Image (cartoon, rainbow, N blue to C red; front, top):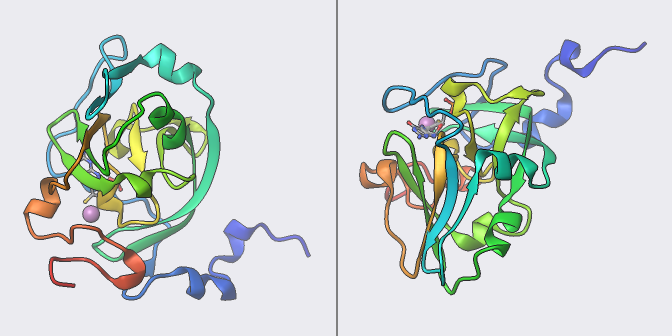
Length: 198
Ligand SMILES: Nc1nc2c(c(=O)[nH]1)N[C@H]1C(S)=C(S)[C@@H](COP(=O)(O)O)O[C@H]1N2
Ligand SMILES: [Mo]
């Protein structure tokens, strides 16, 4: 019998995909520390700056013209929901970082609205992270970070900065918004690195 996977719900294999302490949800909750910013696309750009010879920026049009990948990944929020098989389209960080040679080891993502989050550069390379501008075949909803957000699915979802405008490359690590308020500096869901000291 042909039954779509969306219809049968949780499969036996799913439990192996759910990190400790997490539960699976079909909803897509919105978690934002402040109001949703609405930046006109004609003033939007994405910039890699900091420890680079010269900052590199892409306008919205230039960003849209970069090669995009379809991505299907599980996402894990520190508030304990996990959403399986989320589908996105976006530009690999490998593509963006190739345009900005650097000696840096860390990145601080910066966003419209002032949110920041820190990620080691090694975690952004190697097909592990994207700047996504579509979710489920549609332009990314502003509440979920549109026009574009970071997607780093192997870390807790607070690292996936919404309304991202760029990366500041740094020789040393520096905590971002939630990391300064007691969230774990790295945030591996499989090690339950939720808060400082975990
Ligand atoms: N700019 C920005 N990015 C953000 C946040 C935020 O408040 N501002 N919240 C983070 C947190 S804590 C989570 S769990 C996810 C939530 O993404 P969602 O609202 O699309 O579910 O976005 C992350 N990225
Ligand atoms: Mo979160």
